[in-house]
Amino acid sequence: MEETRNQVIARLIDEHIRVSAVSWETYSQAVVDHYHTQVPDVRRGIKFHAGGDAYKDMRANAQIIKRIVHDEVRMPVELEESLVEALPVEWNQRCKKELANRFGLLAARIPDPEHRTDVQGISGLLRESADVMDAIAPMLADGVIDENDMPLAKRALQEINDLDAVLATLRKQITDILPDADNVLPIHGGVQS
Image (cartoon, rainbow, N blue to C red; front, side, top):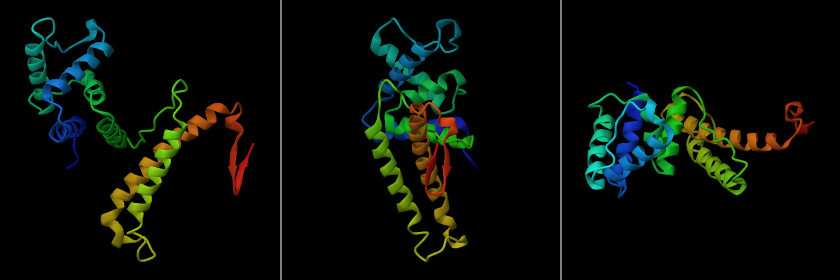
């Protein structure tokens, strides 16, 4: 059975807490901080502890977050973004990829013109290309991709999707600098404008 959306988020949060030195209190404080920054006070359905003893508030808030993550209380939709954004970059990106994939979408980053990441884009392209090659190499070992490669297919498609996301980001960055990007058509052997 496929995981529900909240189970995907919960699994990745649990993995992060388990393999890192971060406590539930520290992670939960990041969730609370993000939630309070993003959700206007009048729209908040979750009342976190604040204004008392800081340590007691953190412990109480960690209990609220743990109950939500461990499905003792239904995960409120308004908290999803904060739960994901409080994760460190690697876990955050994994979570967004899995959530986007559920809709058949790619988790492609929108380029930020204020913080250009050209070198990061190229290194991401190379890294993802290498991951695709690693995933499909065993499938091509016999010279053909066929039903015998089914056990490897899911990973290969995921790696291809990750590469597509990096390419979509780079494509957006490039088309943003072209005044007539809509008139650029790919043709065999190059680009025609």
